[in-house]
Image 1 (cartoon, rainbow, N blue to C red):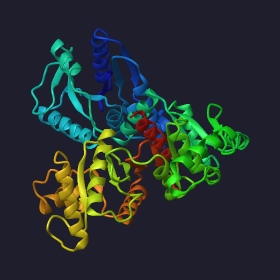
Image 2: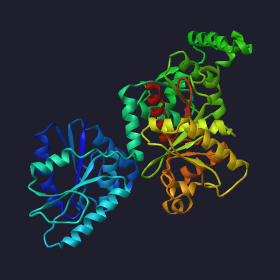
Image 3: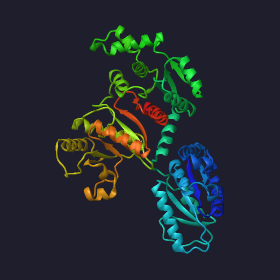
Image 4: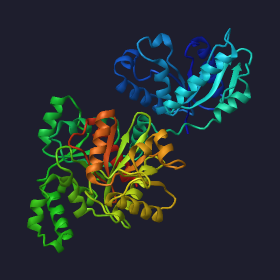
Amino acid sequence: MTSRYIVVGPDSANAATDAAHELATALSARGTLARMNALAGTTPSEAATSGTSALPAAVEAVRAADADFVLIDGVVAGEARTFDAIRWNVNLAASARANVILVLDPEGVPAELLTEEINVFAARCKSHQAQLVAVILPGTPTALGVDVPVFSLPLSDEAIKTLVEAPAPTAVTPLAFQADLIDRARADRKRIVMPEPEDDRVLLAAGEVLARGIADVILVGDAAAVATRAGELGIDLTAASVVSVDDPELSEKYAVEFARLREKKGVTVEQAREKIKDVSYFGTMMVHMGDADGMVSGAAHTTAHTIVPSFQIIKTAPGVSIVSSIFLMLMKDQVWAFGDCAVNPNPTPEQLADIAISSARTAAQFGVEPRVAMLSYSTGTSGSGPDVDAVVEATRIAQAKAPELALEGPIQFDAAVDVAVASKKLPGSPVASKANVFIFPSLSAGNIGYKAVQRSSGAVAVGPVLQGLNKPVNDLSRGALVEDIVNTVALTAVQAQG
């Protein structure tokens, strides 16, 4: 397992360099070491003008380093005249899962001021989900009232031991989530069918998926048309497979099998031959028959058009009573899960309880420790009415079925996420103010909720992630961005790994 550290000296570049050199010597004696700058993979000008793309590039460069220890030299003021160096360093640390080491020059600075500076920096780290593990001060040790270890130069064996044994950060930031997802997908590449190559976003996403080694891509369409449009867009899709719904061998194989599956519904082979000319049915049959490991569609089709074939062909997994969905909402400094935003219009209390349990398990599968809020327009016993009663009953059923879950309901959204509101409405709740899995009472509420958050906050919405099918099929919003599609392909590939 790789241990990562970033050495940051906000106003002490020389001291930070000395500390980093000493730490590098100590770490290299304990294993392989990769050392790099915090701007690896990008440039100061890109960091200043295109931060949303520059930071992911830096995170990927850091995480790609193959060594026992990775030591990152933090950006210093001279390199960052046009952007916030501290913000860059702590954001990189959080998303690359690197422990932060702060270096300060104490010469002529009173202990009280040093203490305040360290506490302010620690608070900033915490607000960005980064983990400050030590402070290094050149010269004679200074007694300070801070909650992190303080070491002096030269570093003692005990100081090195403390740093090496410091636990790795575990925060799930959006970039960390995406990087983890892509790393997991790459580790066991799966074949993902994408049946909408007429949409440029799908082609662009397919090109990125292939270029980054996330998955093998199968496009359903006309090979010549795909090649022509890819050339016009300037993307390389030569590694993608392109299959046609008119392929005689595949179309006949799929028609015979679809007719068998739907025999009780009176479907004949002739009718099946017509049905599988629909790209959604054709792609779903590829997954069902093992010619693909998962499917991502919906950029150019309705949700029903994408997922109804999966209900008819792939069907539900054993022990699952209802297929539902969640969106993984990649917020600024955390990941939320919203369900059900795509499948079930008006779930019963029993169904809502199952959606909550499935959503918690899916969130956990992707690194989110679930704290579930059963949303309503009422918190606790403050309101009444049929809609509130349904959430009360759903909460009771879910708690009986999965007593290990941290789950609260009914609860309003503000009480679920805001400390001040939670302290007034539900004091002492293990979920109030700390929720990260939000179960909406209806499809209308869920769909409105996720789109409002996505468009107003800039969050990346990954999904909808379908839950409960035998094999993974995932639907895209017709407003999906290329980044959304890439993330959904990676997610589907991870689901296919089991």
